[in-house]
Amino acid sequence: MRQNDFVIINDLKFPAKFAISPEEQEAGLMHCITPTIMAFPSNKSVRSFWMKNTPMALDLIFACDGLIVDRLPGVPFSLEQICCNQESDLIVEFPRGLLNHFQISIGDPIKLEYSIKSIAKKYDLILNKKGKI
Image 1 (cartoon, one colour):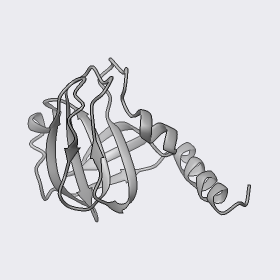
Image 2 (cartoon, rainbow, N blue to C red):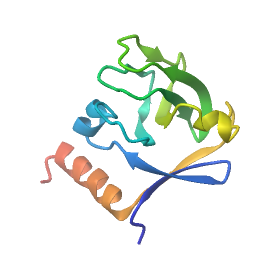
Image 3 (cartoon, helix red, strand yellow):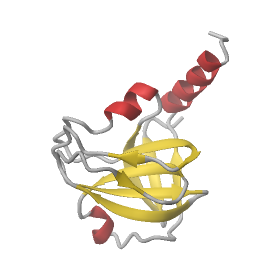
């Protein structure tokens, strides 16, 4: 059983936190001072982020159907909206500079590897939405 979550890009495997619940998605990396990679899986839509209360400079990847469709910078503490003009089903926040270091580009393949804990959390959310628990 997998104990950790990972983002995989071009066969590079990055340990990450997955924001699965609405509360985790809303909080993101706010107030976090430790360099962290965070993934936000979702249904396809045009989504936007801001960096309010986020002290780290970030690079955001927007992906859809397993491919990176855009890369945008995030400025610490900014209220400016960071938005890709295309639908995405995954957004991943990286500490600034990591994408350039590993030469990660638009068009690169990306996928998530879920831990058993994250799989259980996703399943619980689905059951809650359906009123099963």
